[in-house]
Image (cartoon, rainbow, N blue to C red; front, side, top):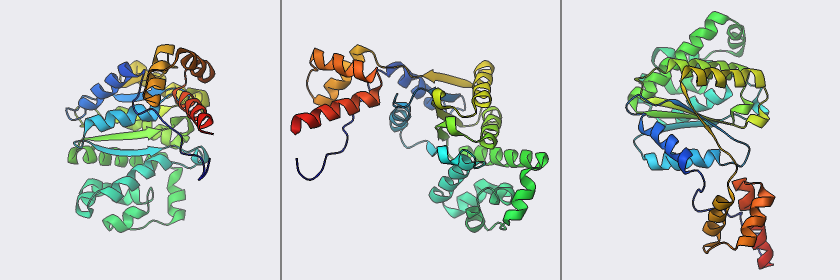
Length: 279
């Protein structure tokens, strides 16, 4: 072969997730009416959590604003990092006059949360020392949570909004508490919802994260969707979609066994097999 190896091949269609897709679609369809639950999608790495979210958001169309972020393993000790990224996405995508209206009186407290807001909204900048002094004050932390909730509600009032936070297994404790506050605070009637994804086997703060998920489940706030390995039949459909022709039974069985039903691994195995055929 010359020119290097081609990029990894993925299935042109998502398979084996029809029921889960319908549940996400139903939640997104209820956003504009203020009836959407928080959606928690769990599954091991490679099970298709991101693709499930992506496909449903594409079907939703342009009527809903999407503000998206992910928790990073390297950022698990940085307070509020995923929510700072959500605000940063808002700053990048919303006109200045609209941004000022959305941020409103919360701007002074949120500038310490995201310094870029000072330039974008004309708020006063806050020095690092001031931020550190407030970070341990329970009352100021509650004010910060209230400020973010008010902004989230105004974001949704401006346009129905889905907040997507992926890889919650790496969320820091401060962000987890804010997530819980928002999950309960975004009451029915607000044209918004939260979608979070998590790898249960990699949760760092297991007690805190699992307690939150259990609490949301008991309260009826969350729609829990768990992604399981693909069946042999679904693996056959995936292989057929990637090859563009019916999948041989022996190849399907081999891919399914080696991947253990993990769709990402199945795609990588088939890609490797096709590369071997080209050598």
